Length: 178
Picture (tube, rainbow, N blue to C red):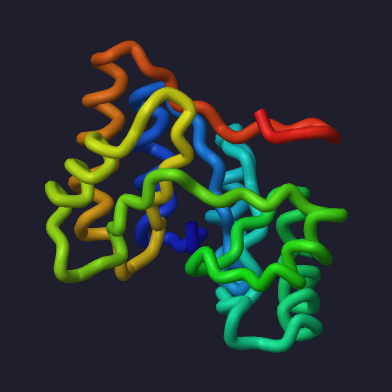
């Protein structure tokens, strides 16, 4: 979540490729505009793209109309039916409105790599302990998270690859997420 940015996203793409891993990147529209080359690199690497609003809005703190406009502004850039609400904050009325156009994607494992009070090792251990086959794990390709991400992501990829797991991007059809 939260990219693309040149300081982190290319490193994430390279790290994923070492493990033949694909991921789904929920992009902030503002970052897509600021870093179009990084966004193009992301798309050409075979990863899935999702909408994470244009300005990283908290759905609980803005009007529904402002939220919908921000999502649509981002979607003009990312062109994806996948949407993840920033902070996981979304009102029931927003869900009802958005579910007709988007597949809303949450997570079951949050690495907490954005938390400066945690270490990369703690983030990695959280993911190891809470993940199971089919888990949707959230990491952040952001400046705020990069110190912990650079430890946790390769550690997780190595750990689960050695156990025979594969890492896949989210796929979807008209009926459901796969």
